[in-house]
Image (cartoon, rainbow, N blue to C red):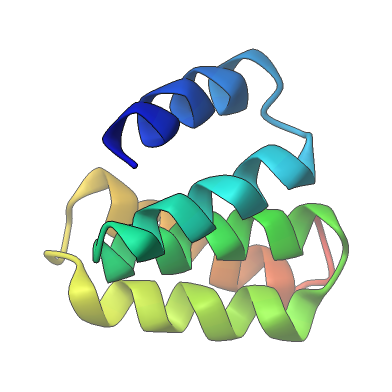
Length: 88
């Protein structure tokens, strides 16, 4: 699972607007019990697919498991804002 996460992080950096990479990264993080990171990756995938309610749900869930002010926490807030404005 750790190797899959490493490869999928590389994939999301190479193609940040490709939702399946984010989706599979979310699954991999979940299987590795990194639940906040899993939710954040699933929020990214949902936002890219235009599933704004799902994006908001996963981003809110991610925030609960992330340290306030951390880059991932701030990204979750960005996703919530984008979803509330109908942007992706």
